[in-house]
Image (cartoon, rainbow, N blue to C red):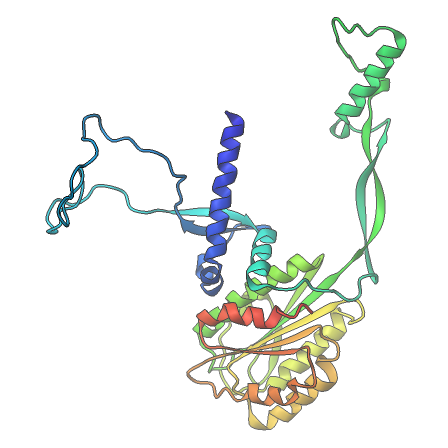
Length: 368
């Protein structure tokens, strides 16, 4: 019975995850459907799914129908009147079930659906961390690490050797000298880390809708990069004519106004990299979001920062231009002037929430 229940539960989980994979584009594009439950799991609402089974009607309710029948003729009790008449229904409608799924599993689904290649990190052997691995067996240790099978085998060997073991009435009683415990070794292992810098234009032309697109896309980018690296550090920069480093909550909620000078954000990003993330040890990713409206005389300075300071040290520099009713959208054309010279510069135009899915694939589809 237990095995049957476990088998049915496993099948149900496969059906639910299949539904999530099928509708992944919808979940990616509409961030409000994604609720974080903790650091390692998220909660996703999916339509209620039932395992198919036979449902018996009341006794004497009628058998199989015979004959051709008429168009629209009800075939059993409780069928709706074809003329639209009748009483209001009292049955429950379709419900939504919240399904918990791990961040790692979500990342795997994202990678499979978007066909994202595995990332080959740099600096693999420069950062090392200590790791305890249970690889040996010892004679001493706490009860919580007692190895039952090894303890039992030692007791059995002792009793057979001493002649006290009776095959007709087998009873094995371990004593203190029989006890064996799992033991560990502390090892050094290479560690790969990633630094993600999110840069967003918060001038007056960026609306709340554009910021929601940035928030949703950033979540999925985080989800994928966390699955590829041992440690991920994030930094956040907002700017209008002046750039500021802020925390995550401020990044998504701040509303400013005024002109736009994107070079100020590039200067701030470079100072953060110099301060916290030596390029020889860190895999550096920059994701910039703007509506493409920049002070015209600043464009030349922006390209200089990119060519000389940022693109040479970044695994990937991604610029996402979010369509706005107020922004000019000219900046992406400036970036295309140097796009052919740097293959780690990736550009994406995001017209609406429906474009998030394709934008993520554009950014991460080359596996850098």
